[in-house]
Image: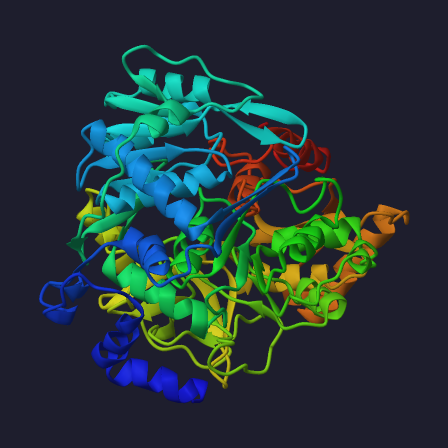
Length: 631
C-alpha cells in the first residue's frame, strides 16, 4: 500500500485506522470508544479499555515462547562491560523490582522518580513501575539538586530510584549526594529511596529511608501485572518551560502503546527479534520511546549504550557497537554525527568495521543540516532518514516511513506528515500559508494516539502553552514551510525567526548554508539585537578536525556564501570560530542562551547544559567582538 493511501485513511477515518493498529497490543478489556471527543481539547484514545504496558513489553513475548531472545543489551565502553538480558530474565527482574515497590506501599497511581545512569536497571525500574500501574518520572542523571527538587515537588513521588553514580569518559558523577541534597531542598519528602550501588562510587545510605537495590531485589516477592485504564498515565516527562518551572508532559498507557508499536514496523521497518539501537538516554523522550517501550512492545532487542559517539575511545565507537551487536537500524541525533564527522571527516574509522547488518540510519532531536545528511549517506551507502518530533508528541510527526513506502529524500526536510498527523503551516493571522512561505507549523486537533494528554496537575498551562494560539490546533513551537509536494521543512523554533529590517528570516536556513562549507563541522546562527535593523544574524562555527587554514579567511568565505545563497537581505556579516558550541546533554545547541549573552541580557544557566565551561568560552568570544557588553 502506498504512503498516500495509508495517510488518507488515517485522516478520513482515524477511529477505524487506530482500531486496526490497536491489534498490535494485547488488551485486558476492550474500549467503548476509540476516540473520545466529548471534552475537547482533552481528547482521549481507547476510552474504557484496560491493559498493562509492562505485560505487552515483556510477559507476552515470554508466553509466546521467545523468552530466550535478548531483550536488552547493555554496552558500556566507560566501564568496559557488556551484558545481555533475555526476555525471560527481564520478566523475572522486572517482577521482582515491582515487588520491591509494592512492599514499600507503592500502588497504582503513585509516582516514582527515577534518577539513574544508562544501565539496564533504569529500564527495569521503568517497567517495574508500569507493571503495578505506578507513574514513573525519569530525571536525566546528573541534573542538579535544584532541578531534581523542583520535579520532586511537582510529581510528589512516594519513592525514588537512583544510581549511586554515573560514569563519564573522564570523571565520575556522584548522584547520591545530589539526590540527598534535592530531597533536603524539596518540600515533599518521598517515603523511600532505592539505591543501585555502583562499585566505582557507592553512596551512603540513609537509615530508615534508603534501600540497597541488590538486597531489596534478592528479598522481593515478584509482583503480577496490574490492569490500568488506557487513559491512565504511564509516565511524566519534564521538559523545560520558559518560566523556569518545568512542564510535566503526561503520556497515557493505551494510545502510547498503540502508536509506538505501529511506528516500529511502519516508520522504522523493524521486525520482532531484530536489534534496534536508539543512541540516546532514558532521561529524554527518545530514550523513553525508542530505548525502552517501542522496541520491547514489538519484541525487538534494544541497546542501552553507556558511552559517547566520540572519545569512548574514538570516532569509531558507533560502528563498533553496530558490528558487535548486529544492529539493523540506528537512531541518533544529528549532533552525534557532526561530532563523528568533525573527528573523522574521511570516515577512516568506519572502514574498520563490518556494518552489513545495518539497513538504515534515522536522525532526530534537532534540525539536520543537508551537509550532515549527505555525509552520512555517502559514508554509509544506506538510507539516512531525517525525521521530526518532540517530547510532547512522543513519536514522529514527519518522517520517511520506510515500512510503508520509501519516498524520495529532500535534504533539509524530514519528508511528509506521518499518518495520524494533520500538519498545517499558518501565518500570524491563522491563515494557511502558501507553499514555500514560512509560518508557524501547527497540528490540527485531535492529536493522534501517543501524544501528550495534558501537563501533570496543570490542565490550564497545557491549554495556554500548546492550544491557545490558534483554537483547534496544537502549536509545535517550530517555524517552517511545506513545499508543493507536501514535504515539511522545519527551519527553526518560532523564537529563532529573526527580523532583519522588517524581513523575516530563518536562522536554520543560514545554518544550512554555513554547514555546506567544506571546513565547517557544525554551526549555529543567532539573531543579535541591533539598533538600526532590529536584529542581525551572527554565526558561530566549529571547524573540522585538522583544518589549519586561517580562520579569518574561512569566515570571509562563509559571509560570502550566505550573501550569495540567501542574499544581501540577510545582512550576514559576522562569523566567530569557536572550539565547541554550548549544548544540552541531549545535544541541542543553546541558541537562546547565546542570544541572551550577545544581547547583554541576564540569563539563567540552563539546567540541562552539558559543560558550563563551553558557555564561558563563547561568552568570551562574543565579548571580544563587542557583544555581551554587560557580561
